[in-house]
Image (cartoon, rainbow, N blue to C red):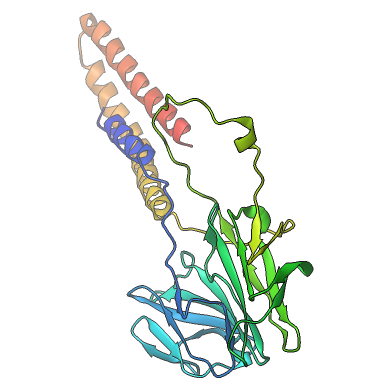
Length: 307
């Protein structure tokens, strides 16, 4: 009966293991943009206990301070950027784990035009403003904007605002300032808005005219509708509780093996003890055999359900 109790306890514990994802460690960039001019400065910051690494054309998984940047705790600063610093940056723990870290693609332009866009994925339904910036002069100039290589409109003051973004707005964006050049491309990713549970409402449903309103894209004083974009790739999220469940499962498996290994000896002792009883106790022996069989069936059934 003791073996059955152990099995039941551990199986209940396994079923209670949480599978909620852990939010990824964020890498923050200051100034908050993904494109920079040559010789500009940038500061990258991870959470405590994490450090910045990168992949570029000349570095692979290089830690900040190892031939590039200056590391102070979880902060990495690059005082003078070069086009060779273009690459993928992310946070990695001191133990070498990076599976739960967000990553950022930074671009350093040796030209005279950059696109200022959100560094991290934006929430579905939010507004996103893009700015086309020339190195000289620094004031805003009229610019043309492109998504996945297709022209989507002009911004008289060099700005474009995407209203109520959705997954169709994901893609590679760039801009062009006439007489100054074109910016590198930057990806805009849209993350799904978490579901909200609202209390029952007694108000009447919205009219069909409001429910059928179309999403607008505002380019300063003009309006365009971006075409469909490509989906973004997000890093996997760790489920640390899963590893705990695996450990508990292994422990349970060991307990089951020990039980099955000791079962013949226990049955032999039980059989000898029952044979020494008088014939009048045959009913009791039958009840004990039945109880043992029920215990074995419970153990087998619970283990089968867990598998």
